[in-house]
Amino acid sequence: MHETILIADADAIRRVMLEVQLGAAWYRVVQATRLSDALAMAPRIRPDLVIAAMALPDGDAPALRSQLDRDPALAQVPMIALTARNDRAARLRALRAGIDDALALPADDRLLQARIRSLLRTGFSGEGLCLAGGAPDIAGLAEPKAVFALRPQSARIALLTGRAGTARAWRTALTRHMAHPIACHRIGATHSPLSPRPDAVVIEVGAEPEAGAELHVLAGLRAGGATRDTAVIAVPAAGDNRLAVEALDRGAHDVMPSGFDAAELALRLEAQLRRKARADRLRNTVQNGLRDALRDPLTGLFNRRHALPHLDAALRSAARTGETAALLLADLDHFKRVNDRHGHPVGDAVLIEAARRLQGAVRAPDMIARFGGDEFLVVMPGSGLRAARQAAGRLCRALDKALIGPGGPTPPLHVTASIGLAVGPAQGGRCADPAAALICSADRALYAAKTEGRNRYSIASEPA
Image (cartoon, rainbow, N blue to C red; front, side, top):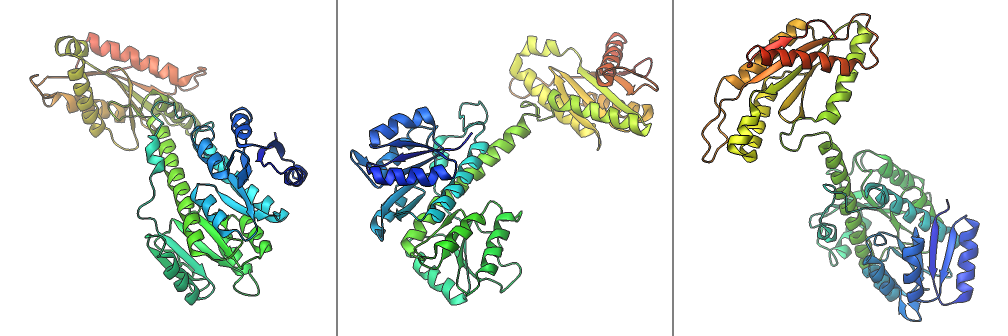
């Protein structure tokens, strides 16, 4: 499916010219002549990018940006404003309104196409981080909206220029518009100029007759593991659209086709820093959510979703190497009485403390998980019966050695555990699900330990 671009412009000639330019690049173009029409179309067509004339019959591009931002599904759609040539005031006004870029008319086709490609890459990357288009309603993965509106307060900025004096002059001019710490570096002066890692890099391209070295540095910044997520803005020589296009296609997040302008660069930097802060927070949210999906929220131990594949992998590895893997299934004794007599908050406190003690008794590379309720599962890859018996004994003693104090008015409680132990896979066994078979064997041994008096372990009668 081709990306959809919404054009909002009352000038029919400009709309037709843009449609021809964009259609040649296989974009789907939808046109609107008024701000109100664009706002009516946007929720329905869900554009991947918006191009709007700075002035519209019933509003302007900044008003369109403001209205789109009110819809969470459209707030992250990138936008380009079209301004008159050499209209610096309009360009700055567009950038202050949160519009991603402002290009002068008539738009250079190469620069326009490169800028669209760059903005679409950024948009699709953000969409991926937002989980299926930024659905904020997924419980546990949502972040407060206000968090994303915060401006970075201590972002580090690096200036990379062909001459050291240029970077110092740029820093002096930039400090009149922003308070972030700014470091100056000369391209080629050192192999590792960016330490500590900056949040944004401004790189000069075209300072020398050959811009190859600067463009290679730019591409390296975007490809390097340490700086892959760093915002990069390229500053080509004023009016050099060829270098601007090349910089965008090498991975720059933004360019300044009109050359260095401290006020404009400050606005672009702030926009890129906000984008980076939002992407970083979304990335952390997704990573934390994925990690938490494998953890029990009460005890912090792994959960069943992680434990079962881990057990299956341990058994498959044992089958390949001819070794064995052990499984311990531990269940707290008379735990139901704790909940019935003292309430579930006390029961939760007991589970938390029991999990802490059991985890302390498990040795690397063994894995412990809360399997459900008051039941815990321990997988011991590459372990045989002797090691499993020793581990089972440690787990029993870890709980039985002292009373558990849940706190509050509840007196300390004496909690023990019964454990079923099984070793697998069975030699020559052809069970369709060795992990399920081993769990069944451990469960039968656990039941035997309960029957025999609790606070002990029992071994499965035969390998699973």
